[in-house]
Length: 380
Image (cartoon, rainbow, N blue to C red; front, side, top):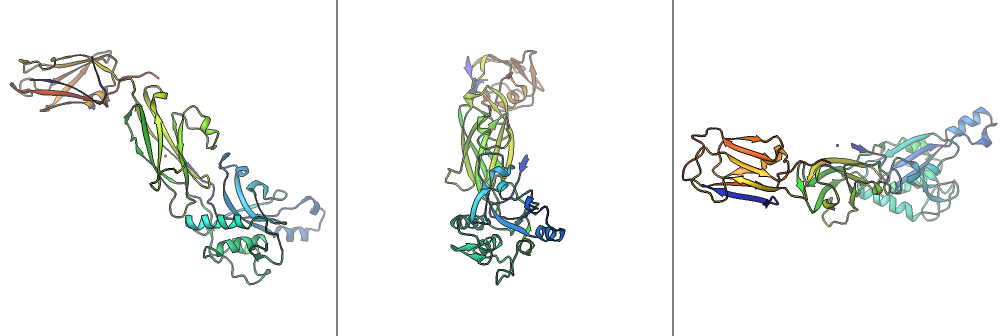
């Protein structure tokens, strides 16, 4: 018997995506009506409702769903100091959320805003001294200062009463904060590949010029779990991840031991995350074949001579074979138009020329090659 590993020869004469926001974006909330104002006059409630609050979206904390505000982090000047909390905690009693605002920042600007915001943690709040780094901040002054550090002047402010959150929110420098999920492409393996042993999954992942920057990619087989960072790694199809450990920019590599999974057809899923938790899923079909089929017998025999010119080539395998991949894996030197006929159990294929009198030539050696893409039928 001959095993079909890479080549077997015998001679004679085969997208989804999700987006939340981008790091460094500003966000704006109303203040709602706290319980202690419920008995206040309506005019005062109306005035209070016009007051707003500003903050900076910092990033996803990677522990839970990127759509959960419990796992999205904000940095802002509260009524006491500059602080960092889950976005869900930056609220009074059910305030309205006005949305994110984006100034079309580059990933470098976004990173700088987040880094500078972190340096101002615990700086005291002040209503009057609204924009004094290292000393005092008000919520809108904090956002204004951060954007000024990357060359963007949201409001032409020259004092504490010339700026307020709703004015800043409507700055001409802003557009509606629309997050863009990263671009994902699976470079290797490719659609329809047959794989075995330990392989490299090579992924190109790019978060565009104005994105938050890539966090990393993960691979799954047959089962794509919900996007919850650490929970998804417990899913039965989890293969592995690369949190940007490669030296090539935008290229990620995950090692995949195919022997941990059964042979046959599978769906390989790749999920790429950026630093804000925006993600893209992509998948391809691959075939795992670690147990190679064998050739049980064949006619003509190896090196056989005096073969009739109208002969039929017959190959019998030890397993039922996949017709499409096996026919595609068979090549014959001095090729000719041929017809494939299969036995009912898919173990034997017969190859005959279309014209039995003209296609095969006397005193000519023919070599039949079956390469490693020939797959056997596998019941999962």
